[in-house]
Amino acid sequence: MTAPKIGIREVGKTFVSDKREVEALQSVNLDVQPNEFITFVGASGCGKSTLLRIIAGLETLSRGEILLDGKPVDGPGVDRAMVFQHYSLYPWLTVMKNIRFCRQLKVVADTVHSEADVETAAGRADALLSLMGLTSFADAYPSQLSGGMQQRVAIARALMPKPATLLMDEPFGALDAQTREVMHDLIRHVYRLEKTTILFVTHDVEEAIYLGGRVVLMAPRPGRIDSIYEVPLPAQRNQDMKLSPEFTELKRQILARIRETSGMQTDLEQLEKLTAIAG
Amino acid sequence: MTAHLTLASPEITAPAAAAAAQEAPAPTPPARPRARWWSIRGELPRRIVWTLAIAGLTAPFVLWWAWTALGLADPMFMPSPGAVLERIGRWWTSEGLLQDIGISVYRVMAGFALSALLALPLGLYIGTYRPVQALLEPLTDFIRYMPAVAFIPLVMLWVGIDEGAKILIIFIGTFFQMVLMVAEDVRRVPMAQIEAAQTMGATRAEIVRLVILPSSRPALLDTLRITCGWAWTYLVVAELVAANSGLGYAILKAQRYMHTDKIFAGILLIGLIGLLTDQAFRWLSRRAFPWRKQA
Image (cartoon, rainbow over all chains, first blue to last red; front, side, top):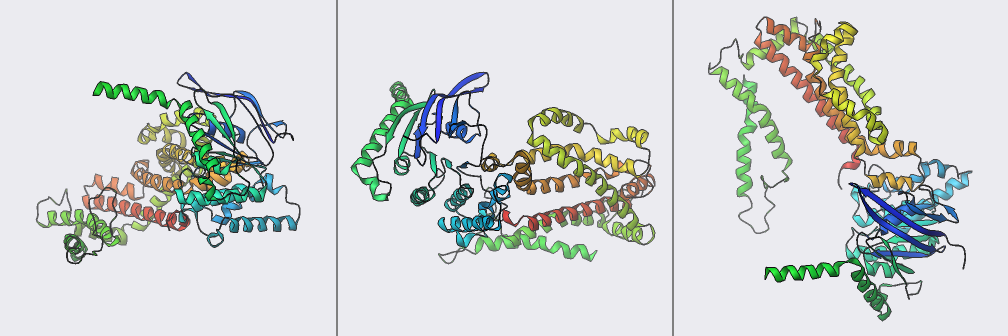
């Protein structure tokens, strides 16, 4: 086994609100291999988004450490671009200028040494634009695009600086089911093309299985990794696979485990008691 | 006189338009959508919006005109619109209206520009960095409740009674409110926009320059528009300070001689200039931020 791309070591996070301490994450351990596609699922409050934000460097951790190529993470960086659920596009910039946003930043500008580098960057922006099917919308503003197209711009913008790791925090959560399917195939395509490591947080189990190489199931109170599932699907995927026995069996297992860990069962018992009283 | 009558006519067409809108969809099944006047946050055809706006603006004038024309008011206390119009004419030809407007616009704009110049960077810092907010926001909140008029004696003592004093009064009246509003505009920039830049490796300075500033620009222009209106309301207060020209001063002087027509004229002119500035700001906002429009 090669050295992990991302090493998550005994990571813990405690939020303090109203003098009450909430353990959002408790000793999380995970090794992410280079060019792995890992999806995170779990009941709400399991800390999956918090973990992703800690890896991004947007959130500090209370205990443990995150190693990136062996070095501890200290703040956000251009090597870990993130795609958010929404509101992250710059509405005053056109689609093309959104995608090229990172070109104005010093970290990226410093990598430009020659005319050829500038041309490569321009070519990459064009390529991303056409990869996302947005070529004819290059000069449109985000407010003129549908939700699905806006997310495609956000993905292209995140990919522009060639991040080694792509972090996605429920990026398709606000999209309708049909658009989401299109986005799934698109993101698998991007994954094979770009050779990035992808960490993808979602609450949709089907999405998690269809996209991921491994599905990490997290459980709440305190937030922790409950179990990890290998996805028995080939690298080249298509929508029909969602109906295959392996897929549905894995989906059944994961859904059952989420129900067990979410604490919803006890809630249902409570509800039965209540309705019994009411009846 | 006739001018008011013709201006009043849209008011008469408004109910007629409403009646037409109600009757129109009845005959054929694929009816065009009828204008629903009272749906919450509903849409209205542009034509009706304009008609209502003009009606709302002219109605008080019509009432005022009718009131005085019927002789219900003592002209000493309530001059007729005609008398006020006439007064504006005389003010223009022989009493130096243009100079009064000029000096007042200068004072308001100088005070307003000075507070914008200081409030924009300060508000940006308060809205962006928590320590600056903790240090300065309570103080600003405290000072903004102090009445600007009460500062007049101090301003006269410290600055004297020249132009600077008048500009300073307008500055005191607008600056502290403006700082807090700018800070709020800056705080409204969505966190996802800032975090997206962070994960692309942006530095703090780059985030302020490339994300926070451009993102809050429309809100900032709106804040400037609103505070510019407030600056005008402090004009009369400012011209209490040993002025011998200006619209506010003219109103104060007219009070002394019981020239109610001139008081009316002064107030109306300030309102008109304010309305024009406001519209100019709105026009600028539409021109500068085309991306806000939906497709």
